[in-house]
Amino acid sequence: MKIDLNFSQSHVDELQLRDKHVVVIDVLRSSTTVIAALQNGAREVIPVASIESAVKVSGSLFGDVTLRGGERNGKMIQGFNLGNSPLEYTELTVRGKSIIFCTTNGSVAMAKCRYARSMAVGAFVNMSALIEYIRGLNADVLLLCAGRPPAAGAFSLEDSVCAGMIVHSLLNHQGGGEVVLTDASQAALSLFKSFGRSVKKMLKNTDHGKYLAEIGFSKDIDFCAEVDAVPIVPVLSGTVIKLRKDGVESAA
Ligand code: MLT
Image 1 (spheres, helix red, strand yellow):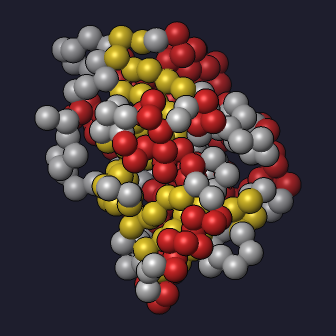
Image 2 (cartoon, helix red, strand yellow):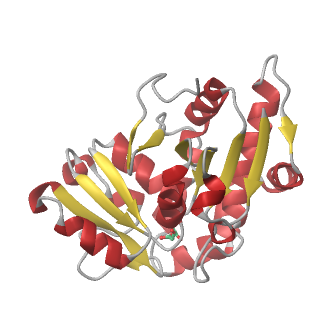
């Protein structure tokens, strides 16, 4: 199994992802929010790359079962129902709903995966479930870090450390098959070894973590730091993200 990695979604286009098994990582906060939404009973999350696409897609769906969620500069987009805080996506709010999801980097990375062979959503909160899923693929994997605002896809320490934790776990648990690393996945591993000892402390000290605290989302950081709190794996099925059912998306 070769593990490759990209440090930002802005450096890849959808054709480069064609036929690959991709894991999209946007720890703060899109990946964590999608995981929370599906854990709390959302029917599906529909990732879109722009507000215009969100408006277009919601026009084609029934209003009472659809919510629009997402952010610009970390805050809820005007006219949307939800922002990008995982804590907003409670069972009461999202159960049974289709969520059209538009964020600065995370949803863009997810939407770019439409030609990928598979796409799973990864974060600290679903680490062990994700590792089990990747091991089940038994195929080469690309870890796609979304990156952080304000610039599209700026380097994000939290996404890279999370990717490094994935690499570290796969190296330790592969059991049989060889794990081959690229320069990028080795670099992420090294970042995990330097910064991964306390995930919460690391998140609080990142550029985006500090920004989120400044605008009132400190509690999101605590939630995003909880390794293995949510044992599910969201996967792309066509153009929507759903809860993975055991074994269904494994590589042939
Ligand atoms: C993004 O997609 O860039 C982030 O998830 C931004 C955020 O924290 O809301």
